Length: 88
Image (tube, rainbow, N blue to C red):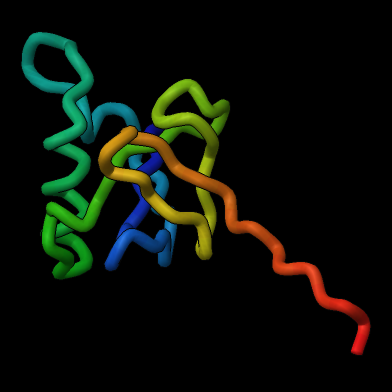
């Protein structure tokens, strides 16, 4: 299975799962653009909002979830940082 994060303004808002045959071209090679276009057509998204990721973290650092950010300059997902409170 392939995974794609929908990223809006640098924030992950949703992660989708796509079957591998959807992203495989006629030569048998997986193509990120095929998955992006499939999800764009299915959900009415802009394909540029979609970024492929991997469940085991081998693509773009870590597997993201809603609230993660996508660092486009470094091409990685970044976990959200919890803010510490002083207990007040």
